[in-house]
Amino acid sequence: MHELKKARLVLEDGTVYEGTSFGYEKSVSGEVVFYTAMTGYPESLTDPSYKGQILVPTYPMIGNYGVPVDDERDGISKFFESDKIHCKALVISDYSSRYSHWNSQKSLGDWLKEQQIPGLFGIDTRALTQKLRDHGAMLGKILFDDEEVPFYDPNKDNIVAEVSTKKIMEYGNGKYKVVLVDCGVKNNILRCLLKRDVTVKRVPWNYDFTKEKFDGIFLSNGPGDPARCEETIEHIRKALKGNTPIMGICLGNQLMARAAGASTYKLKYGHRSHNQPVMNPGGTRCYITSQNHGFAIDETTLPSDWEPLFVNVNDGTNEGIRHKKKPFFSAQFHPEASSGPVDTEFLFDDFIKAMEASKK
Ligand SMILES: NC(=O)CC[C@H](N)C(=O)O
Image (cartoon, rainbow, N blue to C red):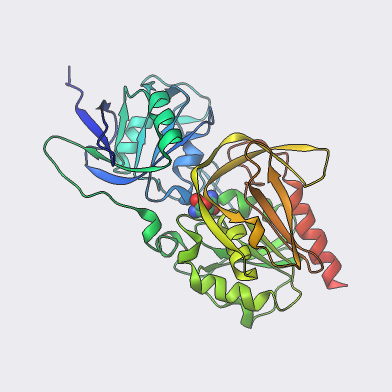
């Protein structure tokens, strides 16, 4: 039988975990982050917001439902969130080489090999997660044999430029014309817009959309530190002077805040899961949300014409903002939730209503 290869995960504090390779055999480095969702690895691996990160799911059994077929509808992948895997590597506890699902086409290990992404199993991901929770997010590297690679911090680079579309793309033929600023957009944002009678013009992260007329402006999710997206922030700052409705998600929320004059900061270890509770400040209803972020808005720095829209019930951090008078709002969590609970998809309806109201 083919000997399974061993490899090491080395953290910046010197901790070493030994695991067994089930993906591509290549030494890599990035920011090590954990997520506690039980399902959704095809969606998470293809989420451009994980660019530069080594992903650690805490759920112990991964791979058991394989990898879906790569079908398209209207030019958009049906089951993936983008056209490739974006994270640097996957570190898990137990790998299921035998998989079963009506829609599966290949094993997770084969997919990782094809996409040249390393995967390690046999690592105590719960112990690793406790370490990351105590210490905060850490840099790490996966090393094969005697290979050496330097530590790499994705938050120091403008990685949005690497995942954003290089060319302008148009989708749908709906009533509302929306410009989608692609900072690393997840496909489900496109799907959620298109099913609501929208025509989408998808543009690169640094495209000056303020020179054209749209019914709405959409700011996507994306990887890395929002402070690195100065060009996008500059364009949003101009758009905030007008009245065209703007909605933002995750990185889009952070960029909206920075354009408004607020600041963002890095959370100790971030929110990555399917069960993050959020509430409207002073509200009575709780929404369960899907999240994947390491940065957050410092609510105390919001200018007086803005207000918090959602707050995280676990740690009290800000989860969204809105302008007090103009139709601008954004969420730190993922209302498009792929994967994850769909409690907050109504925010897309709110965006449509805002466009409808501003057309009148
Ligand atoms: N999913 C996202 O858009 C993430 C936003 C940002 N990169 C963060 O980690 O906070």
